[in-house]
Image 1 (cartoon, rainbow, N blue to C red):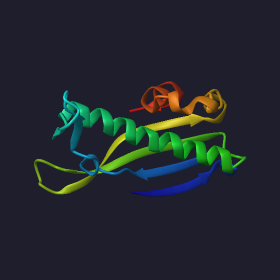
Image 2: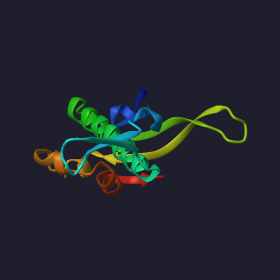
Image 3: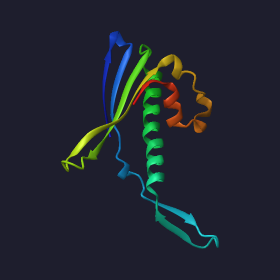
Length: 135
């Protein structure tokens, strides 16, 4: 994971280009306790569950970065923050940087988050509401 940044428009706009972790970095297995309570069942996660967990993780990273920028820099009014990951191109068999999403977040809109209840904030839903531009 890596981040490139640029501050433009006399400091009122911050660009963050975020290299997100790959979905393969998430745990591919899940464990559940057997009904007897004496055995641990380990199985592969479904592709749907992996995609949902990855979306939560990737959007959570973005939400955290937006919060850090707004809390440490007083001048920015907006943040442009695209996120990308390395993916295998099935036609060329090469690894490419694929942009997964891009958000434009306004400081005023971001301040509407209840920061006392962040444990109940869904990052995917929050960014869908906060963003003025989303892919």
